[in-house]
Image (tube, rainbow, N blue to C red; front, side):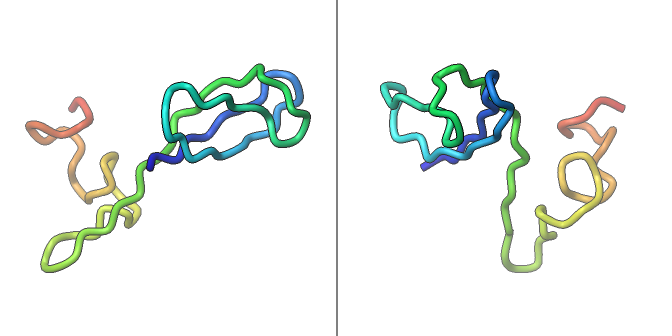
Length: 76
């Protein structure tokens, strides 16, 4: 299940929600407002084996030297 972060537009509190479906009614955990905006979150993944650890700092995609490479998530 994806976990999403939302900021309350009324009180500014940030809340995390596990979203099961688009019909879920989300509300601020601090003030109970329904006036929320979805935030962009950083994806955190670990790769096992001989691969690099993409959750480690460095590079714009989590992998060192990934910026500007063909097919990377960043533009040169």
